[in-house]
Each structure stands twice: as C-alpha cells, then as structure tokens.
Length: 312
Length: 258
Image (cartoon, rainbow over all chains, first blue to last red; front, side, top):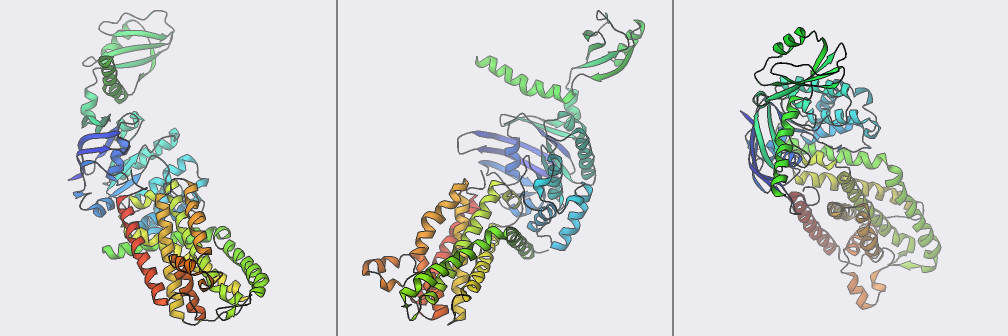
C-alpha cells in the first residue's frame, strides 16, 4: 500500500514564483523516505501542500488512499508533522501543547494526557511538562514538536529538517528514536541538510531541485551510481612525497594525511597490499566526504553549474 | 469514534485553550475593564450624573449601567478573539489546528465562544462593580441574556475576521480604536437617542451597537430607544452575515494559508 501518492503537483505563489513544476513521486507504507534538495528547491512547499498549510495550484495528493481534495479530514488524520520552524504557543505549558494537539484530532482528554506522558517521557521532556515552552532549549523544542506530532499516532510522520541546529549527541538519539518509530510501522518522510542523516536512515530517496524531481530511487541504487570515492588515510609516519600506487591516484593533504581516489570496481584490499609493500602504515581511514553528499553535489550543483555555463 | 464526537472534542479543546489563555493573563484581560468601568461610574455616574438628573425615568447612574456593562462585553469579546487569533498566526501555532482534521466551523466556534466566555465574565464583573454604585433591576431576564450573548458572539466573530486579515500588531488595534470605540460611545451608552436632533436620531439607528445597548437596557430596566424585536433581529442578521464571511475566509485559508 502507498502511504503517499503525489501526481503532477504544482504550486505557483501569488507573487508569481513557481515553487513546484508538476512533481510526481510515491512513498510506500512503512518506508523511511528522504526528500532532499537545496534551499528553495520546493521541499517545504511540497510538505505544506501534503499537510494543507499551502494551497496547491495543480495535481493531486493522496495519503493512504485519501485524496486531499475529496477526503481532506481523513488524509489529515493520518499525518503527523514536525515542521522546520517552531510553531507552538511559547507561553503555553509543554503538557498543554501536546494534550491540545491530541484534542484537535478528537482524542479524549484523559487518553491525551496518557499519551502525552508516554511521548514526553520517551523524548526526555516529562520533567519539564509544566514549564512554558519558551523556557526550553532549541533541542528540547524540536523534541516537543516530535512528541506533539506523534500524540495522535499518525501512520505517516513528516519531518522537515528535524535535526537542524541540534547537537551531535541529540541528533544521534533522535535518529534512534525515529528508527524505532519506523520499525514499529510508521512511514517516515524526512527532509534534511545532513546527508549523512539521510544515508543512515532512509531506504528511498527523491531529490528535488528548482521545483522538479531530479532523482527518485532506492538509496542503495543511488549510492551505486557513485563512480569514485576518495578515502583519507592517516599515516603513522610522515611522508614528503605521495607514493606511486599502481592503478590508484593519490596525493598528500599534509605529511601525515594521504588521500586516495578509488574508482568503482577497484578493491580497497589492493590498495592496502600496495601500501604494505611500500611499508606505509595507516592508523585509520575514512571517506573524505559522505557518499550521498558527493552524489547530491554532482546532481544538484553540477547541473546548475552546467546551466549557468550554457546561459552565459 | 464518530466524527461528531471527534469534532466536539476538538471544539472543547479550543475553548479550554482559549479560556486558559485569558485566565492566565487575567491582569491584562479581566481586571482592566473592571477598573475602567469603575472610573466611568465614579465620573459619569457619581460626579456628572448627579447634575444630569433622570433619564428615561431612571437615575442617570442606573440608566448608563446597562450600556457600560454592554460596552465592556463588546470590547472584551472582540479583543479576546482578535488578539488570540492574531497571536496564533504570529507564533504560527495556528498551524497546529490547520494540519489537524478539525473543520473550519469548529475552529470558528471554538475561538468565538472563547471570546463570548471572556465577554460574559467581564460583563459579570462590571455588573458586580455597578452594584456598588447603583441599584440594578432585571425587567426581562431572557431578553437580557439573549442580547448579551448574541452581542458577545457577534463581536467575537468581528474580532475573528479582524484577526484573519491582520498582518501586524497595528492591524489588531485599528478597528477597535477607529470603529468600535466611536460606535460604542455614539451607541446610546450615555444618553437616549431621543435627546438628539431628528437627523442624528435617525443616523444613530444605523449604528448596530445602539441595538445591543438598547436591547440590553430593555432587559434590565424595561426602557429602550429601539423596539426589542428589531434589536434581536438586527443582531441575528449581523451574526449570520459575519458567520458566513468568517467561514468563507477560513475555508479559503485567507491570511492563514499560502
């Protein structure tokens, strides 16, 4: 079953800006789906239309089979939204924000309090429940929005840059939490600027740029498109010149750091064999850049650069 | 769970939220009207009123009391909804409602009845204040309650429409300052329109607030510048018009959706 079906979705704002040029993509139920794109690509507009915060100019959206044109209430009931910007009453108590949200979905107050307790405890906010939301830190406010989005138990959770401005520790704990939510059957759609996050969490991906879908595939398939990766090796002993490696291109970033390009099909084992022969010892190794990030830059910024060159 | 019950819970939630909000800031929402009205009673009723003598067969203080109560109900109802709705837009917390399945009619009723509750609460406080200065009677309780409820509802609707259109804090005050206050002062709160020259007496009949003040005064004192049936019909007419307009604006997403 499809959690989300978007067909020829278009949006032109009153000021004439066309944010979406007829995009189409589907999200399967149970998926962890990444919607990526640079700033202003149309991600938030897409989410706005799905959640009815933005009026569409054309096309159709179905949420678990419910068309937002004909069954809007049923479609809305399936969705939980964690928006990009804080959107709660800052003077309201945390517990009230969550309980009231449940009320808007028709959940009786007693049950709403029970659920609020569960999610606020899970997200480490229970002790702060009687404080006004304005007293929370940025990370806590993000967690509050996640608790609020989950209180009516949506089947589709949409997170618009949920970890923006969140420290690494909290980001990791949010990942674990989202993975757990997804494993329990909730479909998750995520937009993020942290491509490492998308690569770690998501199984399928759509990349949107200038209001158009430029890629929509499985994460694995997309990563397979990467033809070359650069690995960074930290050396035990200093080197003055890069070594001569058969079939590999390498360079020294500094005397203790060697960067090696590995083309698709080449083996890392071959690289290490050659390094051993030359008595070069590496203490650790990492990818120079996140793999998805490399592809993203190629697909989005590479294309834009080409367009700029053509137009100039 | 059926849709009706879900909608009722959503309505109840908005109403609780609205009432909690104005009670939390009681020093800004409940107390100031009581203080203002006390000053009106002291100055217009106590000091100036003694020189005015009787009006409509009642002491001046007694005559203006229903108008002052109604004035506080109208301004409080309006102010509650316009400020609450606009601050929801400003803080974007209105999105909590927009993404939920809550129908526009429930949003409308929740906000406006929140305004009605504040209006009636403030009206009750002003009535208590009035009792320290004058003797109040109830001529027709049903008419009195109907008029005060309908007036509070009407001005809550007007406040909601103002809140929908408001784009900045200044917009929240324009209508109360430039429209509501003059209409209220010229709506027979402090005088009977029968004292006015013929032209202004007729012109006053175009002021909807006159119908509310007169209707309420009739409920309390049994005297009115306007036929009470006309007063209630005018109130109902305006309510239907503003309700329809507010519903259309919410459905279209004016001021709240892009």
